[in-house]
Length: 469
Image (cartoon, rainbow, N blue to C red; front, side):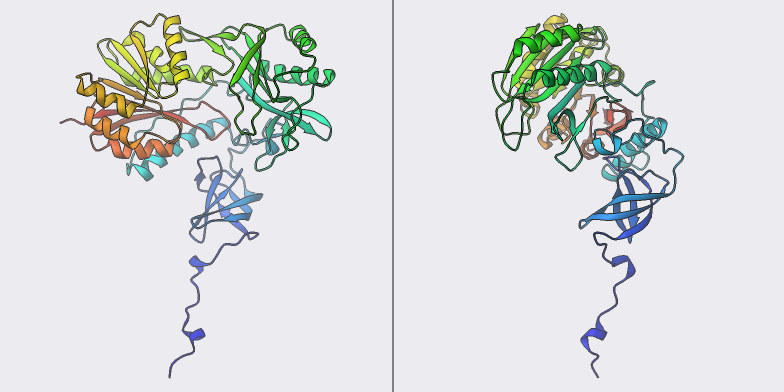
């Protein structure tokens, strides 16, 4: 006799049971994710828990369920990690600018090393990846040389800061522990003067008002500072009084600039920039190199760690003075110029024309006669030069978070430089690209550098050498 269909169906295995939003669960956190969240497993499914640390047992509530993972909100820590500390920032829970202030600094460095190692195990199938301990900071606070804070009104009060994670509510940042004190002082003062003079801030919903963003930059080597006001309109009411008050209260300012951005966009800067007072740029040094930083010029946000990273790049490049070196995705030429004294010739390639223009000016300023910069795509220019008999001995790549273009990887495997030095800000794409390069190369070492303490970001310098033929 045939059994009823309801009886024929098997009871679902416990492992396959569905996780649902609102469900509460107890998890053991195994590791840190790429965004600094704790990773646990429930019924074989990955669960990301913000603010949870490896080794902890936590109680959490599911907030989102996807096919391959779920996210959950930390309700309480059942068993605490010895690495858990009290964050010094009073608005840490709301701000979202940092994600690891609740983790002891040495533990952060170890977690970042493990993040790089795990990516190489997962994507490059390397069992014991050669990842060195993360290079950290003696004092991992006050390291950011640029503050870029939105302005608005909350409960009638003028505020400047960052948007709370997942919301459109501005968190007022009177102080910020990872910013250089000079930048927060500039933002605080600008805010006070704007309030006193009644200068209207921009309202995104109504699309009225004037000032959208306050950008403060400090040069660590020279002490010079710059204030940029990003406005929705060309005119700033009471601008002469504004400049006079800012100059009086901030004597270290050498540059006050206005950038005009009338568009409805998430981009901070518009196309037009003009000087309101002082010089158009501030002077900064990085090691022996000097730079003029205009309002929109790119410059690394943590100068102290940038020097350490570039020294690792120099070490990995192994230059003797006879090499032709290509710097791909060269930006404004900082790495190329750092290496130029140790190579026969350096060629930088970058697709953004303004960055190449800045790189050429920087080369001239630093008398780097053996460095030249080209606008174009590396995957086009490098094979073209190779056909003309110009092949690099060493190639440095510093791509965006998305990693190397596949055509460029193919081109590197064809051109076959002796060494590739890969500077990466994303462990996942670094590992995926290395997996492809292993077709003709060997990974010698990866050196993580902590450019952004108390965040989950980790920069790496990988040395990849041509396989012995």
